Image (tube, rainbow, N blue to C red; front, side, top):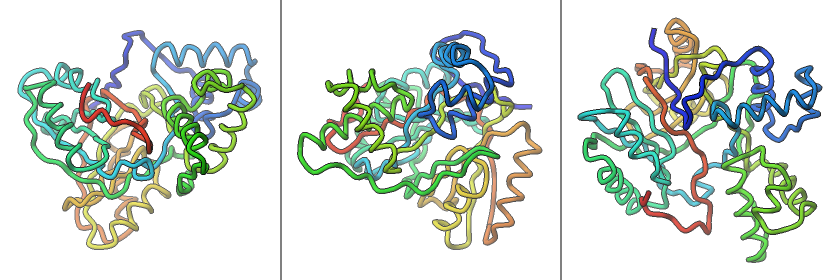
Length: 329
């Protein structure tokens, strides 16, 4: 059976027990939960919770980030670029990883290709990033680019289904708006960041940092999303399922994100309009998931690609006011 490798910054061996899985699930439901909340839910002391969360951070095996709709962040061009590889896939992926506008890198098993998720301000920036990718790894050959029309956050089986994101609301004055943008950027990278760390990042008091954070989080425009090795929670196979609908692909993409367990749902202008990333225990579960999609109706075709490895997962795309790096590492 194919197992997807989650490439981390450390080679440390990590294993999750039942308590680790329960902590992770609780944080995926609400990434701002603190020690006392987790202690009550999981049944461990706050000190033990703190130690286990520290192990998460040290191993880079599990992290909680903030998810904001990229189009609301000023990223008018979000796309998946596909590259064939001549040479080492690992070397090529690692060379591209530092490029800031590259947010996901995965290795598809069926045709030995890298798929790269790019979020930038427009078409000119997209071409600049593609040039930067070629410069970083000449062994990559650009095969195709699929422009995304929507990117939906998924949910795990049994977890709370995420609501549709609220519009990004920033305060009116230039200074307040700048503070809000900096806070969103901090939470995109680490949704569990403490008020003390946020205060340091914003250059304000802890009390004001707490007030700003609670306001932004309660607005619903930024939500919890996990970046983690799904194999640690019993789902070692990650796959992209490509679905073509006869019509109403926009509606069906939203339905999949809301009703079926998945990681991400991507709506494109490609012939196979919906690509859904799922993590499951084995190939039989992939086929069972596909059957659930067929029950939605209007499906013309479905195929799936197992992923050999995931090299990068970030959600800190630019927010309004950011200075884009335009493809520079």
